[in-house]
Length: 311
Image (cartoon, rainbow, N blue to C red; front, side, top):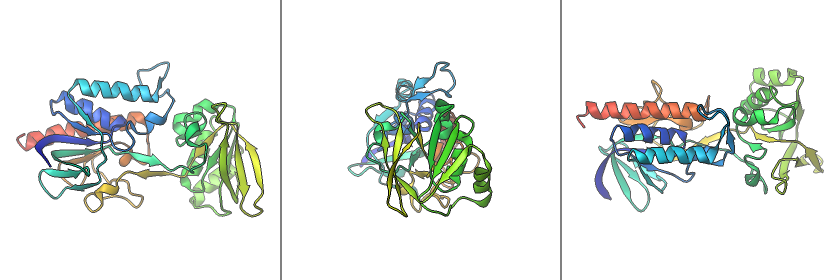
């Protein structure tokens, strides 16, 4: 165990974690940032980001993350590779288990994010940012006037499809079953929209076309007839939800039914000295700018907490 007690440790290196690191660094707290198994978060897999303020021509997701990381390092943030496998938040200082080592910290900022659920298709990952997306509000604009597909049968899929009608000429919701898990009101809204069509009892087996670096169509299989067909489309949006990265906090921090951390007054958890920000606690907005905002809040609260503790 590293016996040095840190002022604050930040779990996660996406927009929320890096903004927290910038603010904590400027407060001279010398934050340690644990980059996790997805360094840079979901933005590291995004191409053009057009809705982050300050970049009138847009900026590539990985470039935005790298700029934020450099800014945090400039103010003294220390970056470490490693994934937190378990925590002990009952002890003071808190203990974070990284497998080969443990870190002691007076405060903790949880910015571990949420991972998109993917279908596991052969060409899916290669086309992320080139027509395959898990965020309609991030990428819908790029498909104005195009025909696109949304996968899923719950409220997430209906919400994504309804939002995408602002841009697309046609949205087809593909679902593996006849029945939908979506709430009655959301399903009815989607059914009544003239741009939305439904294709049920069907699954996507692959997405085309990696060679062109753009989505041109899907390989579909009908679960009733087993027939395989090609379905032309310009984009594939996953409306099957996200998985918050909270497994390591089991029994220590309160979560909702889907695993998102519960917070009060924006970023406070039920454990004094532990704060949560970004997609790990935000299931509603899930934007880079809103994650960055809560990251800043968490760092400010850490500074205030340490002052109250006489640190």
